[in-house]
Image (cartoon, rainbow, N blue to C red; front, side, top):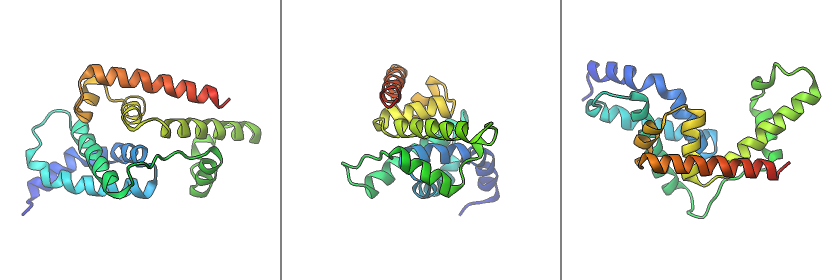
Length: 181
């Protein structure tokens, strides 16, 4: 039975990183609702394991749980051959429907706003098209800001593999974005 110490530790260790957990889950699953399900399940797993938290980097510990939960969830919920790649128009429509246009409120005119939305959508689509190991490494480094050692802990691969995956992910991303111009 959980006690107040468990709740306090959970609040201190896990709660500050729920935004990061959602962002990682969102990139891994490709949809908002799936990411919410993954974060909810990962939060339950973290709460059950909170007494085993040995200190150290709490963010890496939480993101490891989220990553493992997402991989388990996707293995159960999706056919093996499924690859999520949104087309540019679908991404733009979804952003408009969800009201995710706040990032472009500082844009000077409608034409520039359309170009900025298309560029962001093209980048999101390019990231989504990366193979999962490359995508998660890129997201953890460039969007979540984890260092190589932290990514190595989260993904359970050597630092050299992290560096290799990151380089390949960035190379593929540049090729994909340049190829769509």
